[in-house]
Image (cartoon, rainbow, N blue to C red; front, top):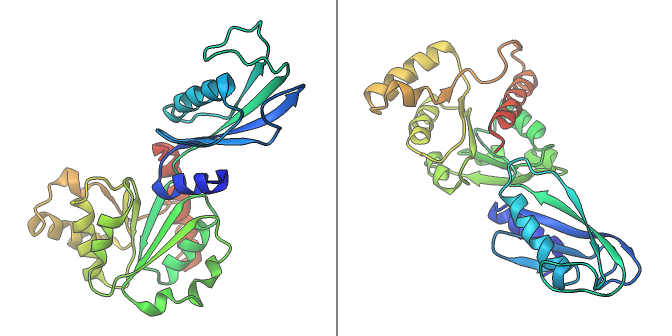
Length: 269
């Protein structure tokens, strides 16, 4: 498997890893500059030369996998028999520098309702390195033509058409997914709020709407859903930055995206 495919596999599995690259070579060495190794929790793909270089790089990579907010770092190896190595002697005679680049798990966001605001929000979030799930009961909101504005997305976009029960998608989402509820139907919104509160491994939960809408929802979640106040308070509404009061879909989307980015900074997930 190529290193590109290995990185893609980790991304698809939502597993952290480290990309190890031979950055510089002086003299003789097992691999040339540019050779790559991908390190996961329990697997590796590729090679930076085997022996002590590779074993030490793998050990350090797995330490980085377990380190919050790990930064890229360089390691230098002298390949001669006078150096005491942890994993045996490599005496090619050269000096090798390797670069370790952490590959963290990116945030995941699910937008329930891809109407005017939802699409504008998707356009903004698609410019970020994250997993973006778009869910709607209406097939006309999810056509290739309408979603064509996301064709150059940096994010990995996943489209879910759910004609009957959009809340069932919650079980398919990765742990820690941030939920944004903004469908065209208040009954659908209410069902999603209830289902999201019953899903223990979601990230933040946001609901678009007015204070009057939330008052009705809050009462219903307590009386019909059986949720206590602390559980209901997991839902943030209104979503977005309070200082931005514009009503245009693009303005609301900017406000919600900025608020969500702040949430990413706080949670680092």
